[in-house]
Image (cartoon, rainbow, N blue to C red; front, side, top):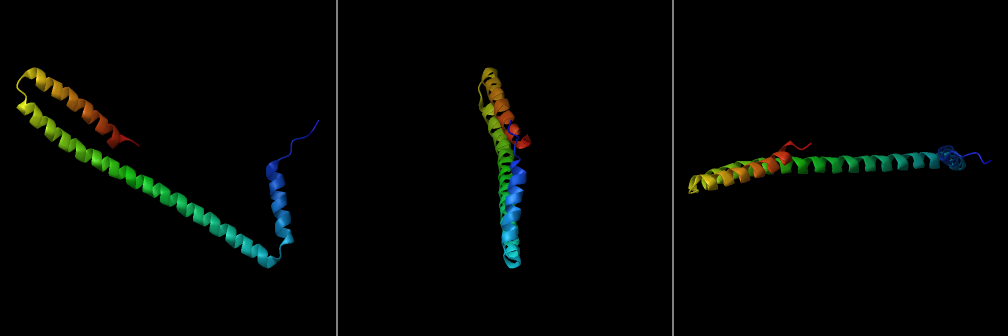
Length: 108
């Protein structure tokens, strides 16, 4: 029977051997290089998340503006409708549109 090999231990041993083979100056250079790469990656992740948050806030604001304009438009359409059946149809459509916009506003 073959015993399983932990890749994490093996990877750590390979890195330790490689670092031991380097001189002290090269080890410091490697450490700085690795730290810079990790910091760069972290900044990219934070920037991407900030952009996603900004776009989400913009979408919510646009949905709120659209809701105000929608209410105004439906009020004017209902006022111009000639009979109660038309007004009721417009109210139903208004509820559907406002529900869709509220989903955007409340999402998160």
